Image (cartoon, rainbow over the protein chains, first blue to last red):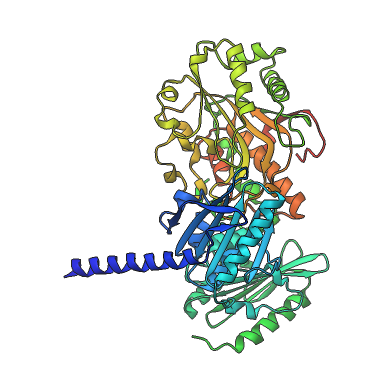
Length: 299
Length: 298
């Protein structure tokens, strides 16, 4: 009986995947600007992505991606253009994976977009799209933009931003550069805190990281939502033990670079202010966060 | 020093200046470098503004000249052929381990220059082979008596940087077994029986290094710059440590601040501390700079 259920489950999984792939294919044209689809589309999942992407596959896995569809376009005398179309499963992870590498240049494509020398990236709904050519010329650039617009227009619905972004204080926040992630590898990529996972981040935790500019100084706020309050409590204990052992019962302190750190928690949410240039600013921003967190309906 | 101490390094350790001590504090306990016995590791950096033209083409003659300069300084010889003969014997069977990563491969001009000098040094043509992928099962490489390791420097998502040490991952049948923990144990490959002690020369190309990688393909032409140089030496760890240093300096210049690599470059330091393959301590490296000095960064 168990074996039969397993077989049925596997068949359903394959059928579901097949439906998903068919849906994804609809979003990408087969010809644009004289560039034609070349060869068969390639499909990858979290187990096979490393066959395609050397190294950075881990980034997409860390955002729980479901399926990657790769379509290549060719035109005589030009280098190929590759479309990597990721179904991330949720709009917050689509935003997150975009935020990992890019800041939003607001090109009017998707819900956030970035272009640099032959590479255009955007996110919309639960999808993250990278369009890439090894070299750039005017024709390639024009085609890449047209392709991106076509794909973006084909995706019917927009998605929501991660709710935690709403708890980042707005004043002086660099809104184009907000990061969303799950694990400590991503945190260290944006802000090296510790080689150890001292905040006990994992694939189920949700974190936002915002950058603030105070004249020449750059300061940061990290807000992490854990599954349960106990995890948040443990994270605070671990943070104190491993990063600010001198804090004692203080929740604001100045460290060796003259900057200020402040931290705290509210139910299952932990917030940490880093590199604040003045104590008064750290206090002010901590108060804003505390007040906004009090308004949350905790799960 | 246990590995746990290294793992625990925090940002504050760097602010306090104790991270460096944590990384290198045990070096005095390490015995003589097993593969390359030198008190202070010599590395030669040669740069020439003419090696690449405006269309990114490599000048064959200039790259050969740069290689000659490096090898002569490294060996103390005044003439290229005799310098190469200090590294390679005419009887050697030489495998040149290159790199074929499509966006930034080992250029053919560099491979040609090495091959030319091997022939000039008396190595028979049939005893020279250039290859990257699949070297672990290649019968020529299996019987080779000497390797020359040559590849471009770049950032790498799994290992922080791709340098000399990382280039030998093709000497094992299952490279992914070395991908864990930021590829920390890559240097172990250098001690495998078919690899150990065979490498006579390492060439880390910094002609157009990749200093930052984004997106699925980890490559964008905006993140390479014409540094127009080559690092040459016998110690792969020293070359990689200098490579890390150069990329960090370029990243500071480009981004206006320190910006961490996608992955900590742990494997370079562990190659020194755990596997004793060479030195990652910049204080123990004698860097000899030849040629073009503009924007040298290090």
